[in-house]
Image 1 (cartoon, helix red, strand yellow):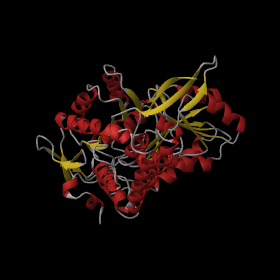
Image 2: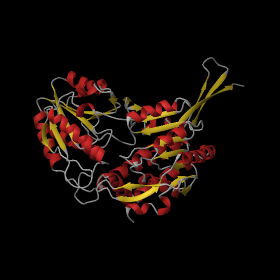
Image 3: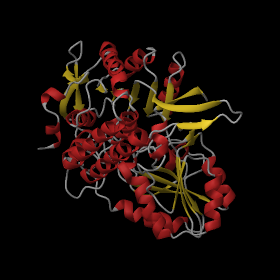
Image 4: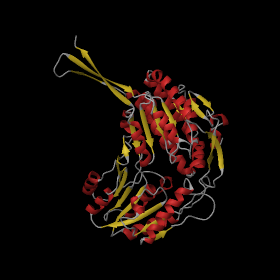
Length: 485
């Protein structure tokens, strides 16, 4: 079996009410290989009427699914986890084909993404309320946790598996039904994931998947429906703000994991070699196409040149090519717009005085590639510092004092991930408390974990995914007043 074999022709369609079906209008759209622009396959192009049919199925299934025993919900997730891990190589190849990441990188995502199913399979049986005496006497106070109801999940293209499992896992565990709209650029992995859940025994209508080229029409149609009770979105801040405004009419609950501008701070007392190791992970995970990717490298002036030279040597040694080829470290970016945006930011930074340590160019030939790049002496107000890069470029700016580093790190509208390298314990505490970010990695370039609460603040969104907090996003609380006699 190969990656595409996970999807038989019948499963390259919409998944509604437990059935694989064509879009109402019969439309289909191609899924392209970012390494050369060729067509991998095509999938059904759903429209608003298909989305409404998916919500019909979710709403119909909601009561029965909420009443399903928590253990059974957990066991379905557990079986799906095992199914994904049994076919990890196939899932990895499929992701590599449609998104561009290397097969090795994709295998890491399979393990990370599947873990959300295992984690929440164990949380399904730990949903509980509370019983207490009224402090004034006379009554008892009972709280009950209930599933919030049908949900809409809008997932991004950069982590086609993990961004789905991180939402689907807690929803299934909590007893919620859902409609999932995967990214137009990478719909195949979500369809394969739906197949794995169906094979694991998920009842019809609990999970529905609508692939489409008209995302705004889908979200507008569903969010106008009072039956939809929650929306979870991972993507750009611009789109997130639109969805929040659309949610107002029905007062839907929202979880938003939006853009990032992660600082990577290297203090003068840091282990520079360890910082370079961490930078390679924080910057180059997913070719830099991650909202948690280190975006701004703030390095103390006393170690900046050493850090830049060592990071440049490591980045320059990476092999660029098709993600499925042996020995390749860096695959293509998602599309030509991504390449053009990065090229412009790099060129502008160089014009303003930045020095190219390594890379700086898009290689000739087919595919959406960009060389791993390190820039030194980048101005603090450069566009490449202020904007999310979403690619394999590390811009380095220097600072002098701890206070300056914190101020510069916080001088962004975003607040998702941050990274700090220091060997000073007192500084670790001070800086962690001062940084305005939902996640702080200390002497580590990898912070994502199914057992950790993932999320940000400010314009990076609200709500948390993963950990104990993740399932809370899918539960409502009912208070029952009981007479004492």
